[in-house]
Length: 143
Image (cartoon, helix red, strand yellow):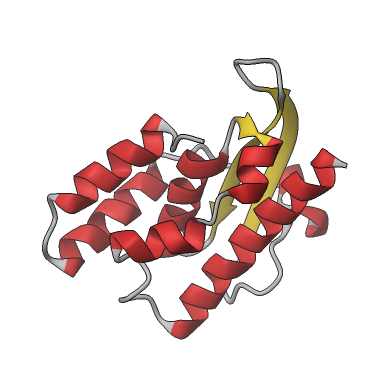
């Protein structure tokens, strides 16, 4: 199971940034590149519970390049740094086969990159809530 190129690119870019403030700015910039959700997509069923900020994740069933069932994600948050974290999660998970999504531990990868060590406890808990939501949807799509 390989890590998507988009996520590898983010990890590589982060490796060049020693200062946490530079990493923070980079994450925010990633979030600014995400397209906005439609107002109708900011519905209660798409809202991620457990986040202090408002976060919405929208998933669509799709097909991976090899024909396996996959999920494609779009997301948005009302907080800049959280929007950036959403962008990183989408780079990791979106468009991948559901079994790979269900088995990919984003929290471990974020820890390897040092992305959680400077997050507040509330933001870290929100990140865990987003990952749990994505992986739970993928597990449900497997059955």
